[in-house]
Image 1 (cartoon, rainbow over the protein chains, first blue to last red):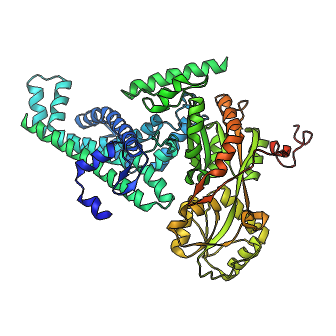
Image 2 (tube, rainbow over the protein chains, first blue to last red; image 1 turned 180 degrees about the horizontal axis):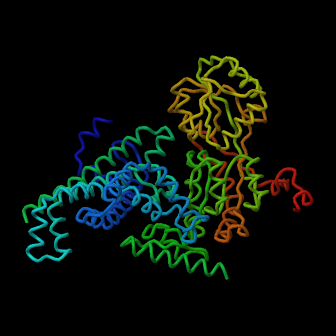
Image 3 (tube, rainbow over the protein chains, first blue to last red; image 1 turned 60 degrees about the horizontal axis):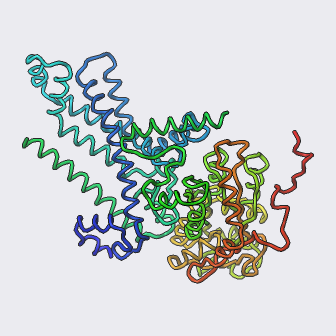
Length: 249
Length: 321
């Protein structure tokens, strides 16, 4: 069976996963199960990474382009955040969204929104730190030229972002990798829920793998693992493709 | 009107989350019961509670055997609601309910259930079903416990032989039962041979399997996993005429709406009524894995046990303060 898995091409794999599939590599699933688990994984991780990017890139540009006392300290705080253990983040988010917590009245526990919150917390430090390195690496001349040509602060920032786009794309990918491969916090705050007919509500690929491993269904877990790896590869390929187009245009 | 205010805040929060999350269309109130899925479609046409979500915290044993998925479709169709089943250990399931994060709990540790009830977090406990625990181990049986009629004698033999024993170590119902058994055997297990894994039953069985170790398992999980592992039942539970101490009764309780006003009490009671009904009790008895019955219904009886509604040894005078 592992041989079949490697022979299958990636598009065929995704196709099989997205359709209501009764069987994937000889392992049978309930109709729509794998597709819905993939959909939840992507929805949660992409939303979290998009939100993180909206916060991180402006923050990285702001920190990178200004000199202020304590700048090195801020950088080290961001770098420390990259290593934050995901189960601790899950625990903190759980306390926040639990009925007893400050956000309890929003009833977010065991929802995708709570999972997005925890992945946002996890993805923001790596995206900020790597973007910051990319922004800092932009040649001072570029910045100065933009200023001399009469650019406003926003213009200068946009020029710098354009110059640093490869680094920023890498940052977003790193954040996405962290988010989608994360299991501890989504298990705690999401609850790994499917409906009775097997359609995922808060089950992601990682928590599904955890569940299968817990039940000793290692083959099924391996198939889901292959799907997860394929998904990460595809998203990376898409982002790299965008980067190339940026150069051409 | 605190409840109305809470609804308002919830709606407000849902709006805020929806706008930050971009295209998220989940509402806070129903906990996001899969918009666009089939459930949503059915919900609109069904009974009064349509569209709501019942959050059930339960143990890994009921979940991993597939029983809940099997029977919940019926409840979801009947009421047009979604059941969010969260599988945790018994201890974690009760703690989640204690925090008001679930509406109903289904667990198997009467002592912990009584404590939960006594502290006012749970109401209307019903006996639901039972199966039993079995002591499993490698066929080589290094401690020689095969066929022992007493679970405590078997554990004592394992401890004396210092044969590897895998403990769940996760505050689950099975772990609680195991600790009770050690206590009854008068042994305080420890040392290299006693390994706490902190995992669910299935994982613990796998670990025991790989190490050729003994472990205490509920019969249901063992049967559903038997084809994958080489362990065998060495000491039977009461279902196969083993000692009564290995019985494994499951109970279901609603979270007290007087303590947690957001608990979906109406739906929780509908669920309790439904799962203790003759039809569903029969469905439970008919549920099989690998050709074997896993759970034995206990809710329907000509001779009801009224003691099930109150914690053991409870009296109104002693708990007045």
